[in-house]
Length: 199
Image 1 (cartoon, one colour):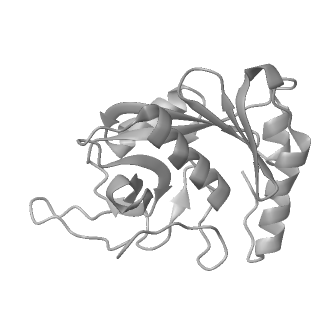
Image 2 (cartoon, helix red, strand yellow):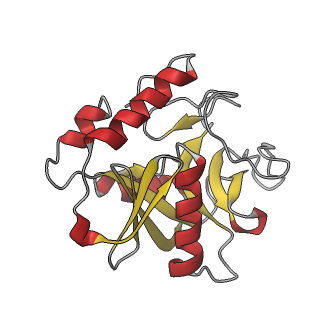
């Protein structure tokens, strides 16, 4: 887990270390782009996007937030943490070109929520979102914490909303959506990513 502080520069340095210390096997790469100094790679075949030391896998099964969290955890990952605009763009482009969502898909769960405390957003990695410091991609009028008239549930789980250009939106955690998992990947040394991520 990245150590979170009030200083944005310390968080950025931690993320930059991941870029410098990790290697991805070139034989697995079909797309290699350098976005804003960060490396994004797409694995050949399957439904995966590699960004830095992280492998993002898109699942099209529609499940609630809790079930999505469990699927990721059971596969030794977490719901997606999106640290910057370059990563957001790569995931969005991948979903549009490869997954090609149908009209019934409203969005994709990512690993951000404020279930425990209103407006205190926490990533599934354990990192707290620091407003004004960390990258965000909120959509129009989001988050709004709408309360359900049916059951009193509050929108507290975040998804990439297709209708708003894949920007972030809060929704009811019981809603069923496809989702994105994140896995730490270093083919040459499986422990390298976790050590450079400070986990």
